[in-house]
Length: 67
Image (cartoon, rainbow, N blue to C red; front, side):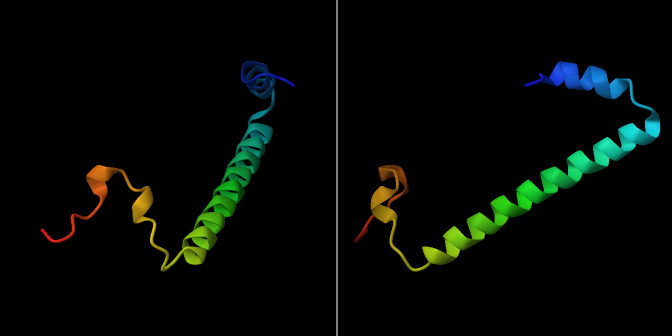
C-alpha cells in the first residue's frame, strides 16, 4: 500500500484538470462515509430511545435523587 506522501507526489504530477477531478472524487467519498456514519448514529439513537443508561454515566453526571 502506498503512503500518503507517495500518493501526494504522484498527484502533483497530474495536470490541473485531473487534480481537480481527484479532489472531487475524494471529497465525494468522504461525504459518503460521513453519511454512512450519520445514518448509523441516527439508527443507534432511535433504537435506544427510552432506555435508561444512567447507570453507565460517570458518578459526576448522575442525578442526585432527593436533593
